[in-house]
Image 1 (spheres, protein in one colour):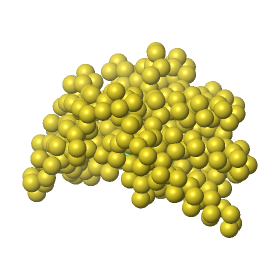
Image 2 (cartoon, rainbow, N blue to C red):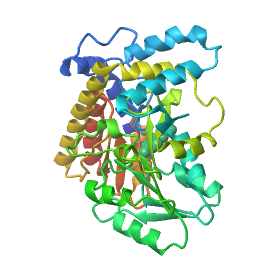
Image 3 (tube, helix red, strand yellow):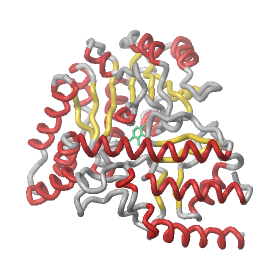
Image 4 (cartoon, protein in one colour):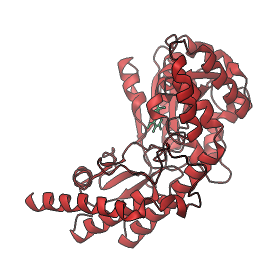
Length: 389
Ligand SMILES: Cc1ncc(COP(=O)(O)O)c(C=O)c1O
């Protein structure tokens, strides 16, 4: 124990030295974006806070709000005494236009977590079961349990892939309606679901088989041939809800903005489950400005893929398996006790993901800035020297 804490002190010290040595400051330059569009008031890869642990545990965008979104927040602040109706309508109209949807196919959520809740409440009937992959994003489990809806968790297959065949079998075996929750790409694996098998199943949606498809990380997906479940809604499917969020690439996790896409009839049922005025003015204007910040989004993607490549390289050098990620996090092997690994990283000044069901010996790492990931890589190499991974 004694030697661990000595280690952790030296980690903290070296982190400060490392960052102050200019590695962080050079990150924007290495991305080819040293000045514009980053303004001086913008938190960026060049201004890492060295007094706090590096947060690589919640899959947030480390570049923070787009400058235009910050500006929109400042400009809206004097109007925060007004109800948010106009700002929400404005945002929803922009989303509708960007995605070629009707406003009636969209619903606002206080984060996509609220959309998940509204979807469950709207879809649940007598004797409904919820079927979902395990591990996956688990908030819907709490909602289901609070409503007395039994949850059937289907373990990921041997390749960490969502096991659609077994999920289908669970649906077929149930005497009653099923709601299927799918996360695409899945959290914590970062893997996309098999597209054609997914499409075929989604096309079978009915009053007895409805789908909630969580696309929280969709903006990071680079794989050719990916098709959002929103296409099924556009084709008229009545029993599919797609959940999206501004908490990830748009960096608005603290402002709570999400939305759902579904058939207008289902949207109406969901709306009945929403609390009145669940939107907030500041979140709405920031989200709209974020949608108009294409350059910032491209910078975020570029930063994410550069930082991710650094981690891949380090994991490969250390012989630690990882799953190729379509997101801003990497699920990778750490060898040994996942909980202990998390604690040791925390002592080294890095917050990494918690242990997941069936993921013993693995960890989910959110992608920070390239500078943060360089520090993470050095730390991981040190862990190897100590025999910890
Ligand atoms: C897959 C997934 N869905 C939904 C959420 C919740 O996002 P929000 O902040 O929009 O509620 C998260 C948050 O981490 C997530 O990983």
